[in-house]
Length: 328
Image (cartoon, rainbow, N blue to C red; front, side):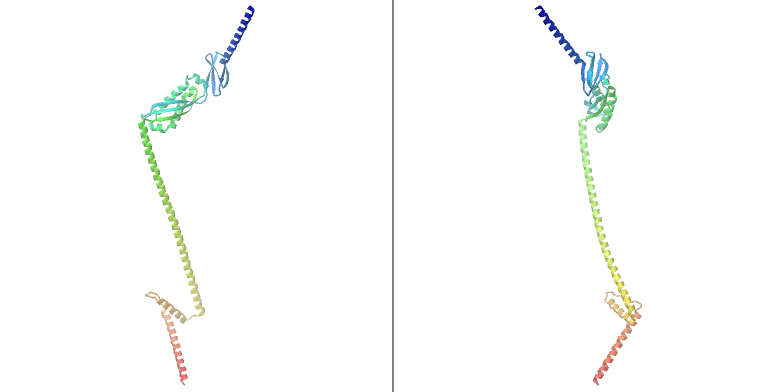
C-alpha cells in the first residue's frame, strides 16, 4: 500500500507540474503576443526604453521585458466647449469650436507630449482667444472662414512638434450678448425691408421701361404703316399724273400731226380758237388774259364771218330768183 500511495503522489505531482507549465506558457504567450490593427501603429519599449516601432499585424514581445503602446492613426476631433472671449472692441461673445487632427508621427506623440488631446485642446483655446481679441465684433461675425483658416495654421505650426497634423478647424457658434443680438435682428429686418423696397422700385422701373419700349415699338410700327400707305397713295397719284400727261402728250401730238397733214388754214384754227373761248367763258374766273396773237386770229374770225354772210346772201338771191321763175 505504501508503494501505491507513492505512485499516487508522484502522479499528482506530475499533473500539477504539467498544469503549471501549461499555465506559465499561456501566461507568457499572452504577454508576448499582441495584435496591431490596420489603423494603429505600435511603439515597443524594452526595459522602459524605446526599442522599435511596429505596423499592423502580429507583434511578438519578450514577456515582462518589453511592452507595447498602440497609437490610433485615424483622424479624430476635439470639441472645444463654449468659452467667453472678448473682441477688439470690448464685446464679450461666446465661441465654441471643433478641431480635427491626425497623428503623423507615433514616436513624437508618445515621447514629446504627455496627453496630446489635452495639449491640442488647450492650444486651440489659447489661439482662439488671441484671434478673436484681434478682431472686431463685425469682423468676427463676417470672417468666420478666414478665422478657421488662420486658427488651423496657428495650431498646425505648434502641433507638428508633437507629431500631430491639424487638418481643419470649425467655429461652430459665435453668440454675441442678448442686447447686441436683438439690435442685429432689428438691423437685419431693416436691411431686408430696404432690399425689398429697392427690388420693388427696380421692378416698377423695369416695368415702366418695358411699357415705354412697347409703346415706342407700336408707334414706330404705326408710323411705318402710315408712311407705307402714303407712299402707295403718292405712287398711285404719280402714276395717274404720268398717265394723264402721256395721254395729253399723245393727244397733242395727234392734233399736231392732223393739223400738219391736213394743212389746216387760219380759218380752221380760228374756229378752234372760238371753241376754246367758249369753254373759257363757261369758267368762274372774273378775269381772262388773252394772248398777243388775238388780233391776227380775230381777223381770221372776221374772214369767216364775211364768208358766212356772203354765203347767206347768195343763198337768199338764189331763192329769190327761183320764186320769180315760179311767178312767170
